Length: 552
Image (cartoon, rainbow, N blue to C red):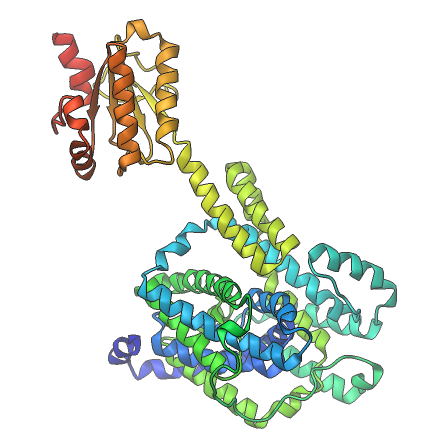
C-alpha cells in the first residue's frame, strides 16, 4: 500500500501544493476528458468519470507521486475503432462494452502482477514506440479534422479518412472551420505565453460564452449537448467476458498502451524528484484506476505525460493531488454541467489536435535514419501498421515487430576475430583494427553476444567460414573467448560440441577462455570441459596465444 509510505513522510507544507495541483489538474482535465470521450464515441461525462474515479484508484495503489491518470488519445481511438463493430450500432451496448474493457484491463493487470510480467514491456523498443506514437498521432488527427471543419468524415483507416475528407471539402461549414482555427491559434499562443496554466479551460470558457451570445447552435454549429448532472453511480459490469468476442485482445492492447505510457512518464518524474518507481506496483496502480473507472461507467484509463506534467508543474508532491482533482471534478459534475452544453465540438477537436501534436516526433525518425537504419525500419513498420490497421492491430503488430527485431539482432551476433594490439599483450577485433598483428598458427574468436539456440549456428558458420578463408593447413589451435557471452544455453553448448568435433577431425586443438562462472558450470555439466582441457580461471588469451606458444 504505497500511501502508507508517502503519508508517513507527509509534511503540512506540501498540502498547499497538492491542493493547487489538484484544482489545476481538474481544470486541465475537463476539456481534455470531454474531447477524448467524443473521440472514443462515448458520452462526454464518461471521460470526466475516468479522471474522477481513475485518479482515486491510482492514488490508492500507484507508486508515482506525480502521475495523473485519465483517458488518453490513443486508448480513446482504440475504443472507437474496435467497440463499434462489437456493439453493432447499439449505443447502450457500446458503452457497456467500453466499460467491460476497463474491468478486463483491471483483471489482466492483476494477472500480470501475480506472474511478475512487468519486465515484458521492455520487449517493445523505443524506436517502435516512436513510430507507433507518430502513427497514432496522425490517425487521431485525421479523426478530428472533420469536426474541426464541419464535415461528415468517415472511413476505417487513415488513408480512407483522408480521401473521404478531401471529397467533402467543398461542403465545409465555414463557421465551424473559423471556430476551430481560432481555437487552435488560441491554444498554441496561450500555451507559449502562459506555460503551466490551464489554457484549454480558458479557451473552452470563451467558446461557450461566444456560442451562447452569438447563438451558434442555431447556425448549425455542433455542440456538446446535455451532460447529466450528478456523480457517477457505482456498479459492476453489465456484460460477461464470454458475452463479448474480442474483449480480451482489446483489453490487452489497452493495458499495453497504458502500462508503457504510465511507466515512461512515472519514471521521468521519479528521477526528477529523487524517489523510486516500482514497475511491478504500477500494474496494481493501473489496475485499480481502471477498476474504479469501469465501476463508474467509464472506459480504460492510463497515466499520461501531458497531464502529469500539468500536475507536476502546479506543485503536486504526492498522489493526494489526484484526490483533490477528483473532488473538484465532482463539484463540477454537481453544479457546472449546464455551462458545458453549448461548447462547440470544433473546440474539442482543437483541444485533441493540440494535445496529440506532441506524439509526432519526426526529428527522432530522422535521427534513426542517420544513426540506425534497422531502428528506422522498425519505427516505420509501427507507423504504417497504425495508419493502415488502426490503433489496436497497430500496437499488436508493433509489439510483434519489436520482438522479431530483437530476435533478428540476436540471431546474427558479431563474431570478432582477434589479433594482437602491436606492442602489447592485448587482443582486439582485427576486422575493426587491421593494424593488429595476426596470430601465427592460431585463430581466436569472440562471440559478442550470449550463445543461445537462436544464434549458435550463425556463430559456428562464421568461425568455419573464417577458418577456411585464412587457410586451414596453417592453423593448429582455435581459441574461443567467451568473455563477451554472459549466458550460454544448451543450444550454445551443442554448437561448441560441434565445433570441437569439426576441429578435431582436422587435427586442430580447441580451447575456451574467459567463460563466466555460471557458463563454466553449464559447460562442465554438458561435457565440454573435458574436451577443451578444462576451464582454468587463470587461462588467458595471452597465455594460450602468446607466452605459452612462444615458450613452446
